[in-house]
Image 1: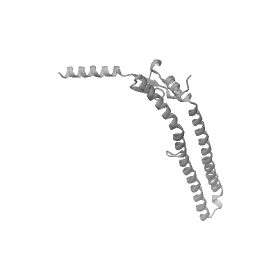
Image 2: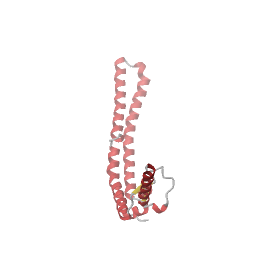
Image 3: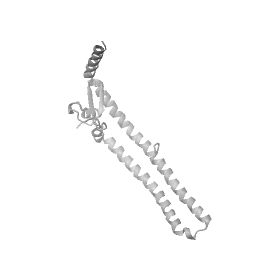
Image 4: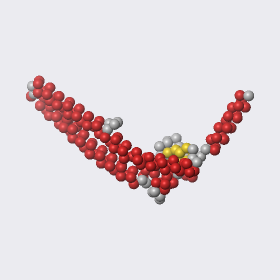
Amino acid sequence: MKKLFLLALMMVAAAAASAQKFALVDMEYILKNVPAYERANEQLNQASKKWQAEVDVLVVEAQTLYKNYQNEAVFLSAEEKVRREEAIVAKEKEAAELKKKYFGTEGELYKKRESLMTPIQDEIYTAVKDICDQKGYSLVLDRASDPGIIFASPKIDISAEVLQKLGYAN
């Protein structure tokens, strides 16, 4: 009885799985063909370079203070040594705080990336969802981010349709 029930359950599961429609998208390909994404990436790169330059200035200042301290340490009084050590630590701390402000998990770069990329991602998601609703797809996988996909038929790749829906037909 158990074997018969298990066999029936497996047949129902197989029938349900075969009735589902699947599709793939290649997000790298889609994003590469969306001009707004390229512009957003350029803005992020420029901001990142600008902010990194600010951090680098503070790091160089801290290194200079440290080198000067090492060269002059034998000539300094105990109080002057303490004062300079504190200045070095303060400059290093300032550089670390600025780096965290710009590049930390909730930093300016994260906020800027989120504000620039979220609308693009939402637009792509809406296009994919509309195509799924029209064609009855149950599941859409991103072949660019899923290393488990070894091979997939180009027939089930809807990336070009997504671009067309977004108005970027090739």
